[in-house]
Length: 296
Image (cartoon, rainbow, N blue to C red):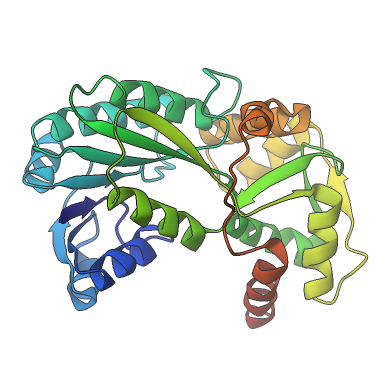
């Protein structure tokens, strides 16, 4: 099969490419960074260098693919994050229509069943609905849990203030996923013969915040590491003082509220997958500790 991947050599796309290439598939990887060309080709994949915001480039890069993996690359410089995500989805729609592909696996997110109130995830709701208008093309949306690797962003707070925290409480539950676990499921679906429009939850573990902090804190030698629930205003101020634009920070404060209220995970609770990712939080904690200690 000819399979085209967006996402460059990211946390999901690189292991996804490795799995597909090992299985004998012909893989093309789209990247906006020309410096990645050599590394892409060293994997055994073809490279397509350009931006997913460039419809002409994207259309040419998708042409001839049997299956396509789509994801929206982060862009912290935009003034309206939901609009950026939605416009990227529309570009994918047009390029897929012209590609000849019969199957699309789209990286979405847990919470994408909601049309609003979820911060950046609302843009993925838009993408799902956009891609579902494709006639004669099967689309599988992977509603992934919150990435474990997002906890790397907490390391500065742990070092400087001796705490972890956000605008949701320690009794809030997080539904999480490890990027390689997502890659395994994406590879399975890209090489499968599913039909129609559907979604699939991809989850590696579920834990209350208090458990998460205990596991990660113990891994770095801080078993008593406390969790602090900040106000929305404090959370926003912390994000913007760290360099995040007010527009982007506002969306992540909104997502935190959705976690705190539990609405982000409501649909997941009603449709829990029978198969979970192999990498549990205790496994990731070893990686977390290694990174934390390497930065000491």
